[in-house]
Length: 553
Image (cartoon, rainbow, N blue to C red; front, side, top):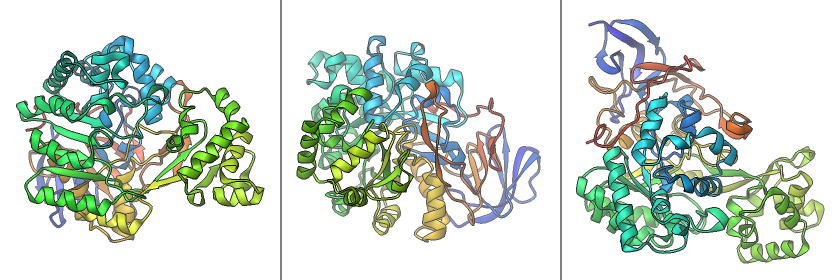
């Protein structure tokens, strides 16, 4: 047969971990119809000197809102990603009552650094209330890459308990409503259920996000629909009421694949002990996956929204403060004294924090806070606040949070039972951009550091997450599989630099990774959406809204 497209002249890495082999790949009607030599097609994509791989799968994004104004889900699609999963950490946009819209926007602003103006202007809030209506709204607009989403614990709690969702336990009647919401979402196609118990997740007014009020009994009840239907996966961020040690009992109870975050290299987090426990659970037959990040996690934050510093009570008290109120507090001697006391009780490694932007003070860029403090003969706390006030809160500080020890990170990348994720696409957009992690993996960890072979890396980006999610026709190159394909040059592939752009609805800015170097072609369901460093027709939206049950076993 004559195919629609033939990807010609490359080396096929099929996503299974098997060695590469030279072959052409033929595509027709959105499916792979042949892999071999001598294939013919109406159109050809040149893959000479390149690897032909399945499109990459990002299991941890927060593109729930961005999908409404950016169907390409940039920059992920520029880095070979053809499938994303949203709704992570329990922050799906639905189910949602109209009267709770403001609470949802405040929650996303506080915990995921999403700009309220962008959320207000960019999301068609009137098009959905139920989770099924949300998926329908996304599907009706179309997407350039495949899009799936978890139903979120915080959204479900907010729907059932309203403004009290962050204050108290659910009643028996409310728990019944929440369980029915999860069942309805699963029937409509939710990929599973996501939750967070992390102390760092704070919503409106600095209060806990709603999911943090749910205990183990509530979690088990909300997972009953997955257990009874025998479909869907679980994504957990353990913390206070639900701990890492509870993850394995939860997975045994629900009997579905489960991933938990974060498995990171950071202070006061014994990642090797947790990895050992995860390995033991898997040896006993549990389908449980820790999840790690590929890139060092470094927040570029300002004191207009000091995300990582809100662990200090003085900053936490200002969680709901306006810019003017913050400037007033930062200039107040009593507040500064409180902040110094907080920083003494819970030290910040200022010697590792550098100034990444300081309008009017170019000499400070690249200096550590410790160096700036010494030069000004003030405390480090005062140096941070002074520079912020002097720049009208526009100064940014690069705060390393995790995965800075590259040797330790390399060990996690090779570990069994560890999914690659935590790119957080769509979230923290003014502070970080790690959704380019596939090209970082292929460039830094494969070519430069030799920690993984290309075949191993591609399997970690494709076949492994597809198997976890139950996406039986994606994550591999084989006749009959969906034609999601990434063609990249292994000798040059890299993420490229980050830059700031103002392209969000309402004029808000974001940090974005440049188009991935060495990514030659990206194909979604047989249609080329990106080629030779350029987007193809912007109106082309070949992605599918993936629904559990219809698209998974």
